[in-house]
Structures are given as structure tokens and as C-alpha cells.
Length: 162
Image (cartoon, rainbow, N blue to C red; front, side, top):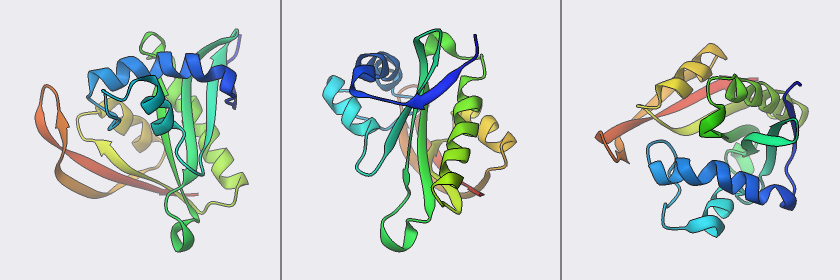
């Protein structure tokens, strides 16, 4: 069965939490506070002004993403998004499909570009995915992320026009 991507509902919160929990606890790619628990993770993943989506196959949620304006006011024409794939579903193209879906959704909402503000430099799998999709690194934040194994590592700002 094909991967379907749809807007998330409150009924998806348990599945979203199950995906976010191991990634947040690993502490190597998301900046969410690992002490925030389920409520903190869901608040992080559903920021004000964002729409959250889930990617599912045969009724099982494999990934989730949010889409929102990167900034208010004069920066609201640039989209921002965050993606998370269930650890057991990695390597199946879920993130790539969510990215394609988010770019379509961003265009449909009138955004002119998409920007990722904080891509951890050691997250090479994500960087390669975004690079293949036409994103470029437009900035580097030296030692901006405290990685649990690598210590202080850079974070990248990545951008693509729509």
C-alpha cells in the first residue's frame, strides 16, 4: 500500500508522541527538551500557526511533519517545517515523501520559499535529503548544538525558493 499523507488530528497524538519520543530522548537532531515529556514534545511539534501532518501506511503512522510561516509579518512569506520519521521506518523514503508533500503544501499556501533554521550538522542523512531537493546552506551557526556524543557541533540554515 502507498504512503498517504494527511493533516494530523488529536487522535494522532499518541502516534506522533511515539515517533518523537525516541528522537527527542536521543538528543542528536531535535532541540526539544527531553525532560518535557509527552506534553512538551507535542507543544514543540505543534507550534503556534503550524499545521501538522502524518504519513501513514495501512493505518500505521510512519512519520510526521509540521508546516508554518518561518517568521511573522514581513517574514511570513517564507515557510518553515520540521520532520520526524519513526526510527523503525527510516530508509523507506518517508522523509523524502513528506518533504515533497510539504513543498506542495507550502506552494499552495502562497509561500515563496522554505527555510530550515537549525539543521544539526551531524544529521547528514537529513542534509543529504534536503540537498537533493534543492536546498542550499545559506548559513552556519558555529557550535550552536550540544550533541550528546559529539559535543558542540554546528547548525546549518538551509533555504530553497519555491
